Amino acid sequence: MTSSRKRLIIVISGALCIIAAGVTAAFFITANGRVAVDTASIQAPLIGLTSTVPGRLDAIYVHTGDTVAANQPVASVGTQVITSKVAGLIVSVSDTVGAPVGAGTPIVTMIDPTQLRVVGRIDETKGLAEIRVGNPVTFTVDAFGGKEFTGVIDEIAPTSNQSGIVFNISSQRQIQQFDIKARYDTSAYPELKNGMSARLWVRTN
Image (cartoon, rainbow, N blue to C red; front, side):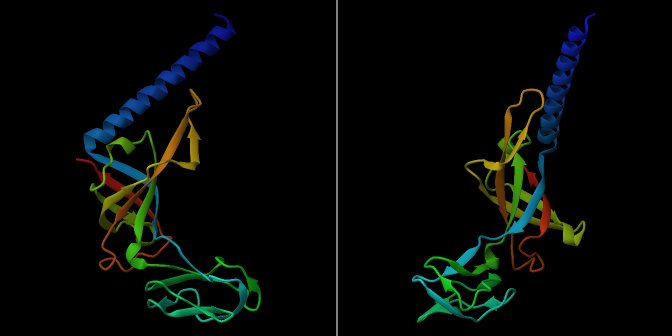
């Protein structure tokens, strides 16, 4: 048998193994009624507080980690006092007091803790088609070991996350990744903080 024929047989065998593994994984997901998402974190949308006009950043009234009420002053630019839109948590502040800032430049960034979600990223080939809005989830957070929390899927990204592209070695087809979000009772789990790493399991039946 020639070396080229041997290489062809090896390539074909490898491709068949990969296909078989994919079929087995799909069967496992369906049979158990759960989809595991290993890459996840606790997140809330960032709220950037900005000046509507250019000017000098004269003062910052808050610090990272502060809790603020709605309409609380957080900074001043010239004659404009910048206030929070909602109650929440300050996650970053500008350190350029005295410097000029442009209109629309974020000076203070905050989150609304009631909007925290478990955000997971999943390959399109690893159970995405089984997930629906309303599916219940359980999840763990690295900071709390094996303690389980519960929630429900409330959003599936309509488009893929392009930065998460990986490749199938047999065909070089792009495998896209999608974000899914699960809400949970933030008042029941106040220990969960923005940015914590998590892992979640989606119940699909």
